[in-house]
Image 1: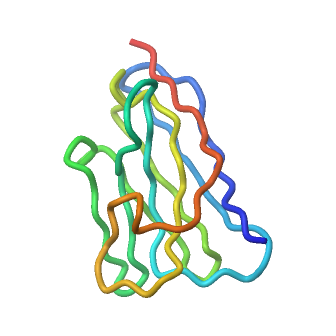
Image 2: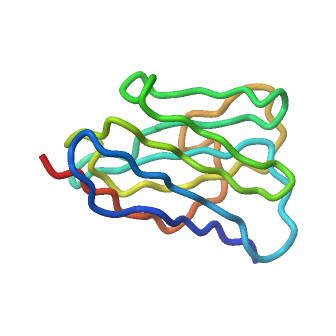
Length: 126
């Protein structure tokens, strides 16, 4: 069984930075894309960023463009999210996601991913 395990969450002051990491464990995993979503209390899970390994294409939510950067290693099925200039609205549980089906696009909807991590909490204090 394959699992995605996130790490790197925590408490940070507004304006600060955090780096989230995600790694797949278990059986050999072949993915076409990996990404990050987040969910704040009382809100729906929303897209943050994703990377399609074909051409290393990336996509970001408008709310994080210029502040967050996604990177990863296709061969190792790892993905990271560097988060800078954090603000209170970034407070949420952050989830790593992976897509095993072939994709010629950068997925950004929850249904376009089929593997999920358990989440790591990011709290930004104002």
